[in-house]
Length: 244
Picture 1 (spheres, rainbow, N blue to C red):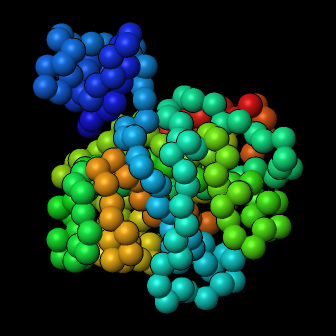
Picture 2: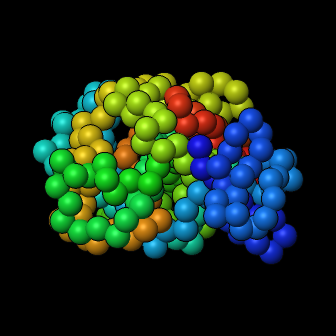
């Protein structure tokens, strides 16, 4: 497991083992206890590419047809927050909702990558919360406003490398104040990760650190100020944020 951390003025990546952090490349020098460091989002993306309606059980819940190809939208880098950061409820919305998602981070600049070579460009997998102002999403023709508020792209806490997790059948869940609201498996993805990489890189160049969020399972619902929302993915960990 790899994390991105701050110690004083220094920001660095480190390997996590038994509650201790070993900086990669030896910078800064020394070994840290995890409790000594601030956990940062595990990447600094130039863009966040999100996939809509990508779980079969979610499509069934919504009584919608399975899409023939992925539906994409973007979130801006300014929306990024990490583990234990605050989700800010915007004044212009009256209904903010969680969406638990598996995300992956790009490890190599890439364009026109075939599905057969797609896994070579993944740095790791992480938890993602595609926070959405649902009332504004229904109001607008497109989704940019509802998806792009500051703090609406929470992801972390760490990156699991591709050889650390079986992403083809990992349990994914969302809890609000300890109550399970979403529970599914990545086996229900309509478009798998190699297909998504091929599809997206035919459209745009992906840079190192870019984040791809793969869609949410059934059970999306409302958040209130004061709620603690957690995204849990088997083999990856738990992303936790408070709504304020």
